[in-house]
Figure 1 (cartoon, rainbow, N blue to C red):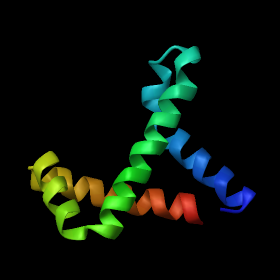
Figure 2 (cartoon, rainbow, N blue to C red):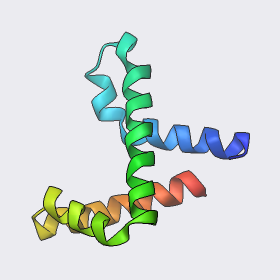
Figure 3 (cartoon, rainbow, N blue to C red):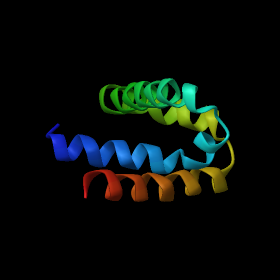
Length: 84
């Protein structure tokens, strides 16, 4: 990812996690962001390489239709912000 793209992605992750980061001691924030980045990468890889299993896993995690709809909205906003 080009430097500008990486920075935009980083700002997007930090923005998405702002509420959580406020509650975490400053010394732990970098580790928390690195962990979030890792699991986001794992989720994207699962989604790309194993889409059927990704749908099953998401349905297992979020069983409420309203939660799935909210995630879809959040995903759209995240993509727009991260990718421009």
